[in-house]
Length: 263
Ligand code: PHE
Ligand code: CO
Image 1 (cartoon, rainbow, N blue to C red):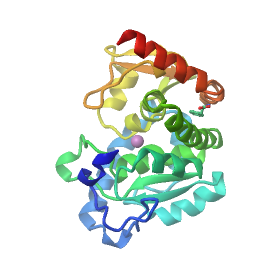
Image 2: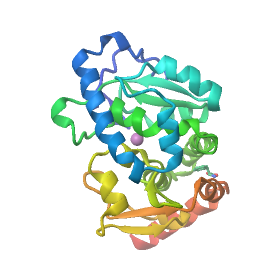
Image 3: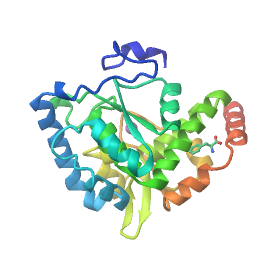
């Protein structure tokens, strides 16, 4: 990711791992109020649209009043699953991102969107990263999966498999749906933090909702600037763990072959 310099966020004081101080005291009352409005809109949608694991974890988080202090959440997260939050200025290079995940550190962007970006923000901000990603890190199965994903990312970089692994991340961690007793629900952070796409993904007749199948997912392109036209539905986090456990080396080779043949 060579364009790091053009990214939104202040990269002047980063450490070698891109970590910065959260500088919680620097958030304004307006920032906290905007976060609270985002939180209130999303949490009203959750009972019927989010998976139970997420709802349970969020309820235990006490993160409704304003932008949370990462250090306090990390203390509890460490006790629950061994994870912690790393404050970052914004997007970080792939290798840095995967290194963090592999060490059970989840990078969370420190800046909050502007009020005029209430409905849509191009790059992930603190609301997306925190509200969307952090709650499920309290779930042991999900938390383990994220750590494995980080190790898998470092491996994908060595094997030229990043494009395929990024699709998997997109269709699971960001935009994944899950089957539950109460019907299909969202577990992907991109959905859970979105005012519009959360309901769209679960309830609209428009998009396709296909059963999760690893190779299909890794062969499926996605778009970043509109709602998805397809979502993949897992049977449970167990399925995600099982299907992603095998060595991806031969899978990347096959996908690269397919791409070459199609070119
Ligand atoms: N099993 C994958 C590999 O060998 C790594 C991985 C684990 C990827 C979990 C995604 C999620 O490359
Ligand atoms: Co995200």
